[in-house]
Structure formats: structure tokens, C-alpha cells
Image 1 (cartoon, rainbow, N blue to C red):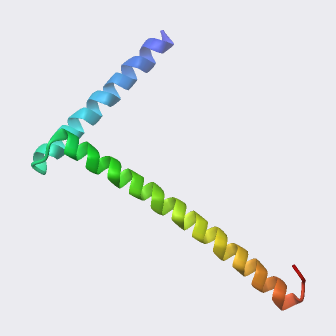
Image 2 (cartoon, one colour):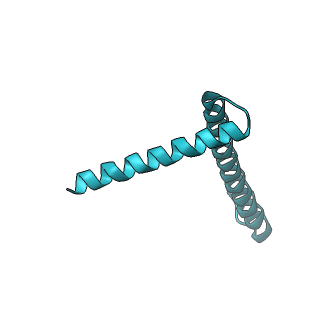
Length: 76
């Protein structure tokens, strides 16, 4: 019974996304595949930016620690 509920929920979510993408495609005068491509491109770009920011934050943190160690006279 639990499996039936999960499958039903997944089908509803899938239908909802299909309806949203189709509506977006119609509003922007695009095909469904173009719209899905744009959505995926946007998602991948967001992931790439998030990873780049995470790396940048780690580097900044490392540099801060190194500067602090230099100030207090700790070697390495």
C-alpha cells in the first residue's frame, strides 16, 4: 500500500512538472525540448556557481588562517 502511495505521488509530481514546462514553453514561444534545455542549463550554471563560491570561500578561509599565523609568529 505504501508503494502505491509513493508511485501515485511521483506521477502527480511528474504531471505537474510536465504541465508547468508546457505552460512556460507556450508563454515563451519555445518548444518543450528548448525549454527543458534552458531549465537544465540554468540548473547546471547554478550548481557550477555554487561550487565555485564554495571553493573561493575555502581559499579565503585558508588565506585568513595563514595571515593570522604569520601575525602571531607561528611557522607553517
